[in-house]
Amino acid sequence: MHARRALLYVPGDDWKKITKAMTLGVDSICLDMEDGVALSHKEIARQTIPKALQELDFGASEKLVRINAVGSGLEREDIAAILPYRPDGIVIPKVESLEQIRWADDVIAGAELKYGWPLHSIRLLIGIETPRGVLHLAEIASHPRLDAIIFGGEDFAAAIGATRTPGAIELLYARQAVVVACAAYGLQAIDIVNPDFKNLDALRAEAEFGARLGYSGKQVIHPAQVEPVQTAFTPSDEAIAHARRLIEAFEAAQKEGKGAFALDGKMVDMPMLKNAQKVLERARAAGKA
Ligand code: COA
Ligand code: MG
Image 1 (spheres, rainbow, N blue to C red):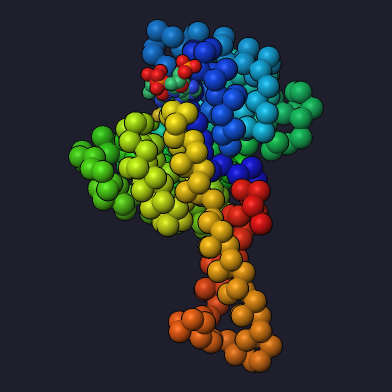
Image 2 (cartoon, helix red, strand yellow; image 1 turned 90 degrees about the horizontal axis):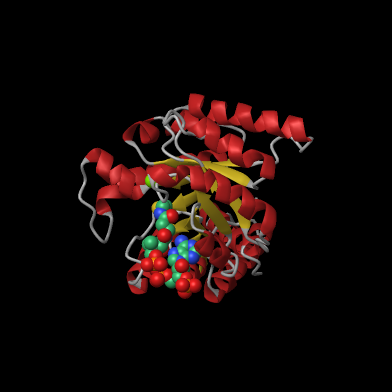
């Protein structure tokens, strides 16, 4: 699965920002048709995004397009406008039911068949950003075309009447519910946007906290946010070295017939091994180790 440490939104009607996005070395570029585009500019986005998919070199960045929500009345024309130009994946915002994913899956499968692309080669990422979306996570996360769930913190806070605070304590329950659903079905979990794009210290702290919660990446909205977020979601050299040491010590202990042992004065057993393996998995996905 493509590593998505930083997923950058770019308004799909803004050619200048779209060309800029290509130069940033970001993991995923998400050309937006939804909330980053004014209602009066939806048609411009439907014309601009196909042009970008055809003409621009995305380099190693993944090509994603976010359409408007299923049920908005815009979704059919959005997806029809971009599918022929073969994005790597489609992002569906504000998903609340498995039915909505099935709709998108049918449309995408139709295009894969029509153009002779391998079935399931176009991946699906969804936004969970409403109370019903959170309540229905268990069935939503089970769909086989899904790669990732994106947690929309601002929309969710607005929907439940929460006041946003810098530590995002008001989002904790839903933010963790998304991670749990993702872990249950082997999906990537992509954390909240930090709109305060001039405050990179706050961004770093929020990204590191998201990584500690179990998120594998984070949404970003400005070029300056890319590097801090990529760093926060890449295991540090120390974390990698510690994971390697723990795995070696674990294997040695197993040979001696010990399930639990002490390393640096702390107990180690199976869960710590699994955690260390996850660290190395993430390091490899980020091209490190
Ligand atoms: N993607 C690509 N380039 C971007 C960008 C983005 N998301 N946001 C800013 N840039 C570019 C600007 O065009 C500018 O380029 P330049 O130096 O070549 O002129 C440079 O980065 C610096 O931008 P800056 O002047 O600091 O910001 P701004 O006032 O132009 O834009 C925002 C601020 C918030 C409007 C802009 O970052 C943005 O549109 N972000 C995405 C919003 C979005 O999609 N929201 C929906 C999903 S939550
Ligand atoms: Mg949103």
